Length: 131
Image: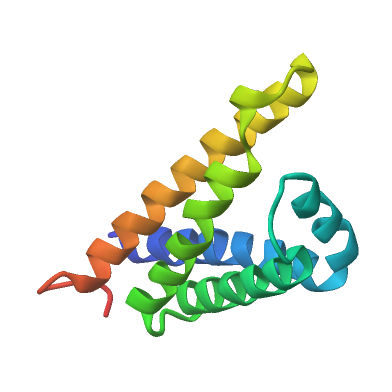
């Protein structure tokens, strides 16, 4: 029996669900995330939190529902690129515990970014599977 489609759907649920969960924090706790964004020097932090939350919703739903996949992947890339390099600057943190937390988040985001780029390539393929 070929389980590849089941694995593919589970992967979509996990990947898309991750971003929808992250989006929920952007809308349920905007003050907390805005304060963190402000501490990192993000201009208009509340607008940035809400705007990035919209990117997370668009990307997460697109992956989860397997609709407009190229746009969903692009939304996730547009979210992950600036967030990874602006918010998780482990190289500028003096406290070793905080530095480790930022390094973990930085490398996690790089892995998610890689997956989003693969998803974009997959969705633009001439013969994409599972469409």
